[in-house]
Length: 93
Image (spheres, one colour):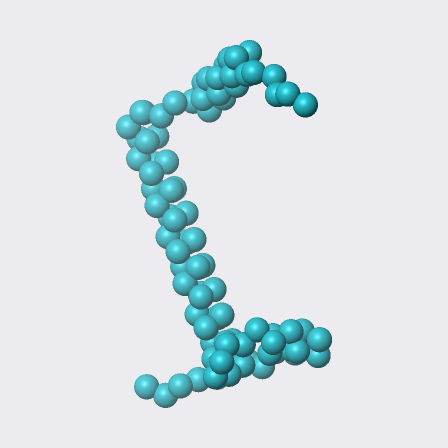
């Protein structure tokens, strides 16, 4: 398979100097950019898969009728917070 090039990008000279300052021993600017692009692509794929699984889980819960309404969850959290505040020991200054 033939390789392809990514489009060149323009950056301020100060940023290029900063970038060159963080390159590791023997690492080229091209390698750095390729690694950054690969990492970002992988991150976005993982985020998309996470969202897809989350939406599927929500739909499964809705269909099963097994969820807890948000207002019930929030009321429970508020009650726990209130109880924790009542039992909290004052901090010495």
